[in-house]
Length: 106
Image 1 (cartoon, helix red, strand yellow):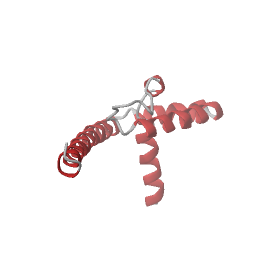
Image 2 (cartoon, helix red, strand yellow):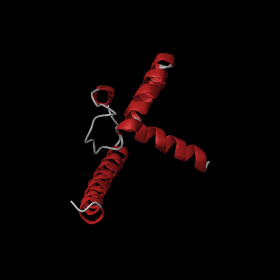
Image 3 (cartoon, one colour):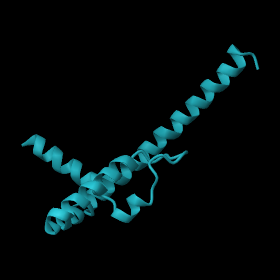
């Protein structure tokens, strides 16, 4: 029971964007802070596969992905992962500066 709920929640989160929005994003684009682009791309492919087999089920998944709870959760995840990404970039810059100044002596 718990596994099926987790699966449903994961699918809803994955399908929480529109298909054109996913296809407009590059997964390998430099300086991307949106860590959810890969799950969004996977969700787009899942949606397309489900849509080919059963348009009714695909429409249900699309409608479920647009519910308020899913949208709020997804926006929270995007906001928090962006913060983490910025902190990781700052840490890497500090390590790089430390390496050049203390170790290499530049």
